Length: 606
Image (cartoon, rainbow, N blue to C red; front, side, top):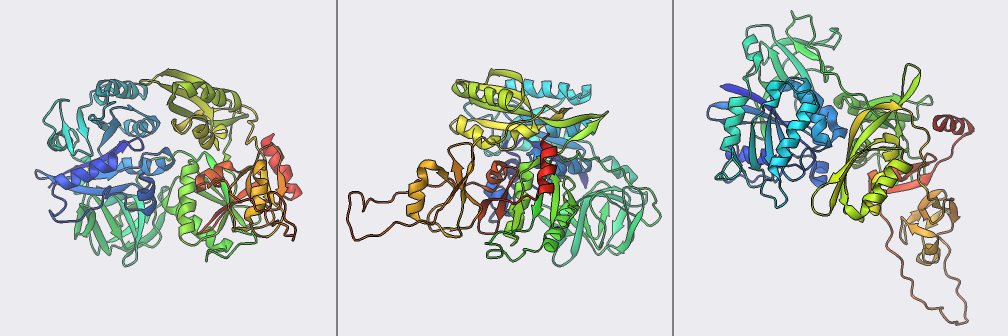
């Protein structure tokens, strides 16, 4: 069968996964009576809850005698490691752009990777049926984006269609019949080339592993595109590292091909196809699986380095071990190393004492998803404030700079610009109208300045602003940036919080806990109104006497406490604070710093 390999790339929430649903449905991948969940490719619990794609996933459809392998990729730059690996498996990309929003930061990120590999894009102007859609403006912005990213003439001469993913239609003209996705299917078959690997079908077998998975029945599974030759179930092959060193020799026990939403066992895989193989025990991502007489490894696409680090350690609070079952540092270390093996954008390093682990990655969201997965598996952890990773260039200390694109109501643009350029050492790059009553602000801000800014931004814009950010460049260190301005309210007792005590303390600040919750000495209960920390007693009950007085029977009505999500808590804490994460709770607390640690942190800040 004729073959095409294509990846669908886009910014967060521009409709990739919804479009894939419709492609599968209209190609006949589902039975008429088959029950299929919405956003079927997002099969991870966290993906469904948050409405974002985190893991790249493959599927395939058949269209007029051609098999089209489709890769659904994450839209968020924090999961860019997935995108960078996946693009090496395909021969074309389908770029989805919201016709109202136009190209956004993550669009720029994934496009730069695709264009650098020489892939020719197909542009799908999605959501053209929205009232605010401006498809012509979005198309012009896509062309400008490609030109700025260094696209060649062939890549700039890209075809495009107008579509509605949720409506299930795509047309070559804006006022087309809007019936189905036939125009997009035909465009993929005509525009994307047959994999050049097909011409190498008679050479010895070679395959570059791009994703790693596991199955309870068949064990370790590696997925990738067959770069040359053929391979059958039962063949003996070997795995080579990036440097060409032999890792292991094994017999292939299973070959799985993507057919719709499922994987089906096949007897033989041919050059150009995307398949999964089983039978190995050590081989991992970026290794070359090849015939026994092949000695050279396939070059793996380099991955961008991490930009932030977070310290994971055991939960040593007084409430440790009450919720989770996995509390030992040894088990935490094993889990983190397992994650680093499958996620090439993450690095794990041991600290000198061996009780804590420094995990480096792309951003706060990536760290938050990893921690959320671990807490659901029964882990208890203590998490430090994220730290930016610096590097030296010619004796100059360099720090990562991010491009921030903000869409906000006109009345709030002043306070946003003041916060970004004043307090957070950013540079304003662009400011222009973005629709009726809206302003688009583009700024280049140090990554340090954006840690913890999301919550402050939502407060400043009354929840109406939209903030997107992506790594831009490295720049010389811009000097100290002030962190959180408010102090915190700290418990001075162990026990259970009392309504009366919290009610009497409400004028000191806002609380993160309610009544009848377990507290302990050093636990952060809320945010102080002033810039200093304040120790309070949340256990102090009402003094009972036999004398009645005015106000004695006054009703206690507590203000609803502020409940932080995991990412908000990690971004909120200061350097001398920790987030305590258990399967049932997210708490904030102060941590004890020995003199050596205090000295080291002071040196880092300086």
